[in-house]
Amino acid sequence: MSNQTTSNPTKINTSIAENFKWGTGCNGWHLLKSDDLSIVEEIMPPGSKGVEHYHEIAKQFFYIIEGEASLVIDKKEHLLKSGDGMLVSPGLLHQIRNKSSNDLHFLAVSSPECFKDKVSQ
Image (tube, rainbow, N blue to C red; front, side, top):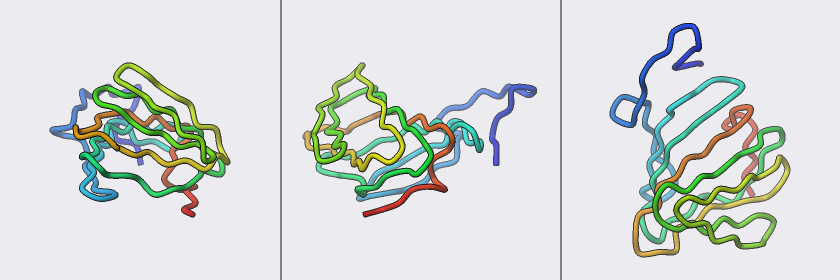
């Protein structure tokens, strides 16, 4: 499942990373995809949002590169701006939203990877 290993370092960026679509017009790129760690670069267009969900095991760290995110964790809304980050612990219901009129560009770092234990509401 890994696209990069420490024994064979490889340069990665969005032009060569595995791309996936999610939500309404959102894009993600797997910069690092392994069982114990996932790093995904993502872009959300204005007015888009992810599905409300939680992870049974994975913790996730969201880091805002550009734009403003509304990160809702257990029904409490947190505004994150460029340069801000926030950790979401396992079991916490969360959803990321882009309420702004600009694209939202962020990194989602998960340990272990979060795609196998995602529980949607």
